[in-house]
Length: 101
Image (cartoon, rainbow, N blue to C red):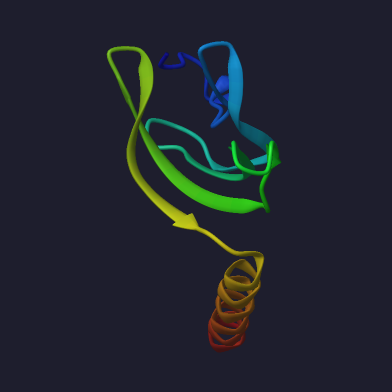
């Protein structure tokens, strides 16, 4: 279950042969012994018999005994929340960049 290669880390998940978490996108933010990855994913809804709306997660892994294991995660349940988080981080980072120039 645990990956030995950061490029192979995924949130995609099957249960009894059925895909229940579908990974739509992945971005590796940092590599090394403590990599950080962002994922866009959708979960299977049994009631709707389809994958739900996109969700997002930021995960920090730790390489231990040759394999990457999750150490921390932050889940974002709605696209609107993701937009607001991105907007706020951009605002803060832009302000910090102008101060350091």
